[in-house]
Image 1 (cartoon, rainbow, N blue to C red):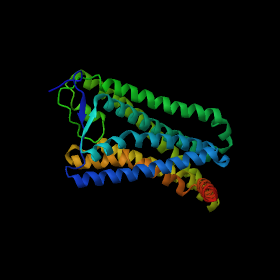
Image 2: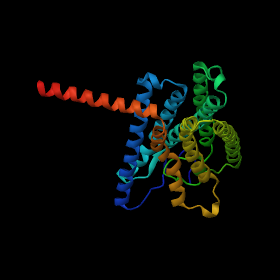
Image 3: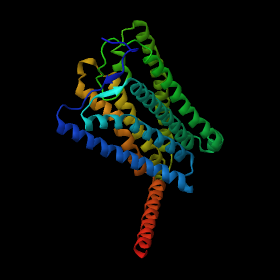
Image 4: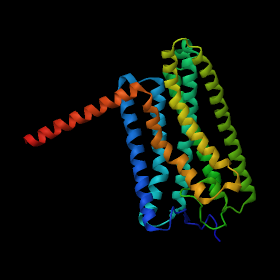
Length: 321
């Protein structure tokens, strides 16, 4: 038995007790991390360097890549370290920091996805008012609001969660620090109810954003189907489908992970769902967005060609001297 004032570390859930599977988990997560870093890094470089990608849609895509990088760098390095060195511990302050940054980046990403939905709605349903409703200053303000909202959301939950007295041990049934598993260790009924109230309030806000996205896409699809030319419909769909795919993956995995029936809950299923909503999206999002974004693909090709040309020049000078 322990409490939060004397607790110095938590025990995270190991993927396996077998050393071979631990190393396999390390290499698997290393590959996913490198894919996420490479994909999001390329998008950041392309949007920053190519003048043709200085649009409002790509401006929000840049911020989305930043949140993806933040998410993958918050949870994966620690679990890779634990698998490589055959340990399961994380310090009390490290757990608090991990929870804060994970909620911060996930919250900012969800609000950014909502703003990107609004951007597509205005572009397709109200194109004549696009410049008025979504000017450069308005986009900057909305992006700042998304980051600020994620910060406030994360700060409230982290401060309240780690103010609770913990007296049910220090073993977390998850490979990273997560609020539901920390609450299971609490022995404060009033603090527990306070955190549940914050969760319900946050969930209501997130559900409101989800309803807004559903309503926006209903209007978008109605407007697209009224476009007379198939080429126009295809172009409109190509700008919406990547965002819709990312939102579907993000929302469905997270919703099922938190709202699934207790009767079907198990440690292995919880672990798989956690990986699905916290680890895979940062690696898949760049691929999803680049598949149907011709401008982005062209910019990435130019970036790759420039990189190869620079390497050839470097090799030429190295061989010369």
